[in-house]
Length: 447
Image (cartoon, rainbow, N blue to C red; front, side, top):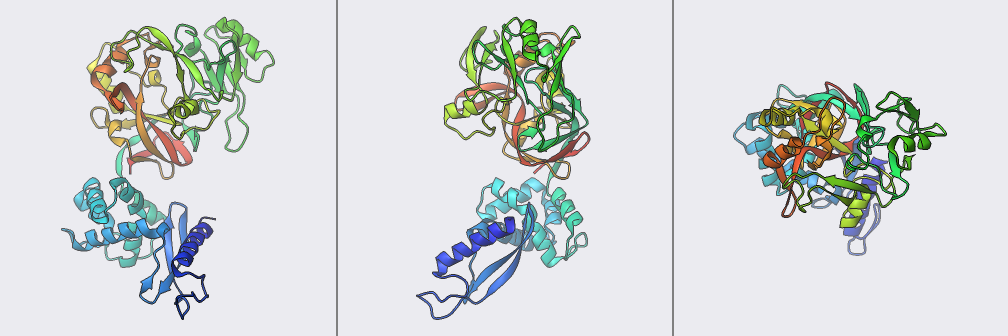
């Protein structure tokens, strides 16, 4: 399908330029097209065979290939004319440092740094195959060599330390050794939530005064979720050891008695996804100035509809803003050093991925706008910092309630997310670029 689509785009554009299709005579010319030039186009979907129509003075360069061509030309110029004579782009990156190399490449190509970075791995492989003069590369790279070359064009920052899935929103979740990453995030994450029947709002631990015990409940799937299959039921275990399952006929009644409010368990978020959010009495934690008060807040696709922006999550999903969340051990260690009396543990922040890193400070702040490769396949585009609210301050299990968690973020990592609005942040949000399987111990690299 990808190959057919690319070729259709190429043929349509050439027809528009030439005024006739292949094998036809344009009204403004007396001859036919001069055949075509085979071109192997390397893409994330694999190698695609394309036919580039020839003209008397060259070839038509269709727009699907134009940006790749510009990066390829820039890459060739850097390799041939840079300070090193090595003809291998991977080795060239090693001489200059990946960041410096890509910045220079983007400048030569006349493209934004991100655009160059998105294309360079595949273009450098074409040049390496074409020239093949470096002892570390061969003219005809197989998949294993290609995978190694792409890895060499990235900056390794750590490894996956832990994986977390939260089957029911705002309840304790499951720590995993392995998880499927889909376009909607970790399979089964935030699959269910409680709905307050009286208000129609989604129940959240951020409604700290109305549902103070929800974080003390624990949810786990009765069966392992499978890609393409229906979401399996969950077991919800209460603080006193009792439990119910989502497929039990009296599930909603049991949960209603537990929380003292009429609730129902749902697998679909309301289109007007709204919660009651409590803002603690922490100065500068909320740019709007709310302190010790509860406000209505739209989340998920409803939030993006309200601000008139495309939503990274589908209607009906229970994610706050984005489908994937990531935090590093560097951030947790930094916060612990800044406020040793508090307990900055990963479970306070309820992130999907905890990445073990060796850098100092809030290292994931520097990943925003980049992609992170997770193991050999999955990839996540880091979109923005994760603004923090009352949630990480709340008591859960043996962790005490602690507003100093939020105060420390206010003092040391308050970032501008909206013009003129700075939020206390910890970790980052992302969207899935490449699905696959995540495993604890997988290498993490910034592309």
